[in-house]
Image (tube, rainbow, N blue to C red):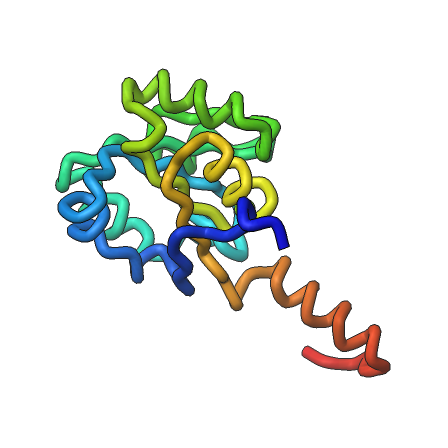
Length: 160
Ligand SMILES: [Mg+2]
């Protein structure tokens, strides 16, 4: 396996990430979030995720969203109170990550990317020289579909 798909850290959910560790041990100053399956899971942004965003902001982090989804509603961005966003970003190209670093006025090495996709988020972050954090979300629609497909491949067709 190409090591550039390997995240620096892996967690089950955003709220498991230690803000203090990122800030004090790694000297991270900005967070770039993926949207679908990361901030919003099964069409819901959890209370825990909202609290994490608030705590990260209170700790002085700059926060942005980089998503390949062209249709992220203004309402939800207002609710999250995140103004630095890029939709339809063409991840895993390195350029959208570096452009976002410029907009955040931070060096790529001071930024952590948080996402649920090893190809678009983790590979892209690693190429851009950012700290990659993988959210391995077992509750996501995409993960369940993947499991169902795997089960179908071995002959099991009906599961909920
Ligand atoms: Mg995603």
